[in-house]
Length: 185
Image (cartoon, rainbow, N blue to C red):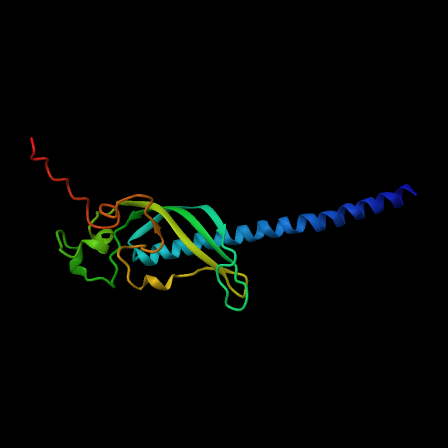
């Protein structure tokens, strides 16, 4: 009799765990997939947007926020906004897609959005925070959704980079200009 009661209790515990633990395991698996995808997508975005001129030295997910009911196209799509911290280091690569003359010292082309490519020396550290929107596809993989308004970019990583109060000047555009001397004295 006690063996039978023990089996019933064991089956009840296993059944209860299956009911209550399975969703938690599924949530952990989804979080893992989102994190892995966000890291890979961000790495690809950084490489593409910076023309391979920078090596990613660190990349970490800071925050994942689900965006419910943001997109209605006849069915529900899983959307998440992921914030990542990154650090990159300028390497010596020179993209064949860019004019080689822009890399000469003092080139007038080395300003604006090209500043990070030819306006800084090898070893320059460029770091900050990115925000990437991920959507789940039919196979269950999470992929970055590129905003269609990115057709006109003002600077590298425009549309992804969080400036966090930083001035674009000296960070992603031409070097910070020295402040005019106060001539009122």
